[in-house]
Length: 273
Image (cartoon, rainbow, N blue to C red; front, side, top):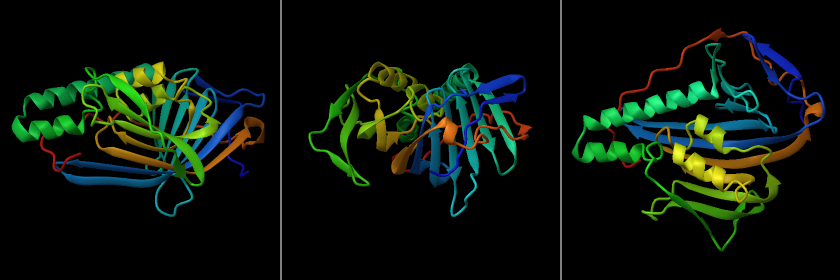
């Protein structure tokens, strides 16, 4: 096992990010992360490698672009103290928010999209509604469908779960290939919501069904709440404990504070995302 890292204690701006001194299980996941989004500016694609360190109370997500061995962006998530830190390693800035602040910002984004939709009509309105249907999921209800046949993901036979819209079964906002044995050490629905991967109603559905969805998703396709389509595939999965890790992983660098980026104005979109 490579020496990654988790600390005993980190203090940032008067707030402590904690990790227990005793040995705690940590799941290390490397995955390919592909996002495609189409709007009035054209097609935006994000094709990167992610490395995640997941314990019961702490999560770190590092994103790597190209052949770089250093992350370009990182997220540190303290599930116990309900803090999320976004690090931009390029311009050396950090954004620190409570879960409540982050959720309020997501709600503001949703209201902004709804306001923009009022200024559109016809095909353009339909395209924006489709682009953000995962975000605007207040009226949706979901059900889980398990396929009879298993799927192979990097040599692992996984059960395939489709989450579908009850009123429109052709719409599948999430498709998962779940590991037969390995389980996630934390409840992931809140993190998926805070990272704008799923909407509010989907978060509640995942929470209600967490006993059936607790295995590691080896592959996942998601209609993204932030707009677009996300495809994820695990390429490596390891288990370790905190006492075997470098204590630097959750150290917050001395970056400049930055403010959240304002919601973008949605007007015209191209294509069928």
